[in-house]
Image (cartoon, rainbow, N blue to C red; front, side, top):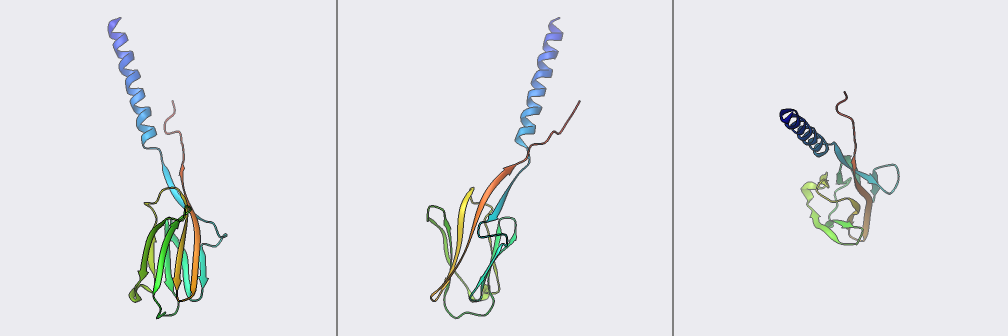
Length: 135
């Protein structure tokens, strides 16, 4: 009788461990959703900001610009998370990876001379739950 009790407790413990492990490895993904419309691209004054992959945007210049090109990443509280210049060598395109940013709303701002181009997007993590085993 004591052996049966121990076996039941071991089985219960293993079942709980398996359930905890399944929850820990549940699939999740983060996506960037462009807020300015269905197209994930902004083109203005020779500058292009477009989505090139999940959580990645490419800033490129269609025609070489002599002015200093400043790229900033701003969150919805107007905090500057990144501020840098686009080197002439990168004017054909530089990819910015946002996979390390927390969920929230952000804006990519590109300015040069008196021009300013911006692209809004939101990052939202989505967790999908699935049944992995059935009896």
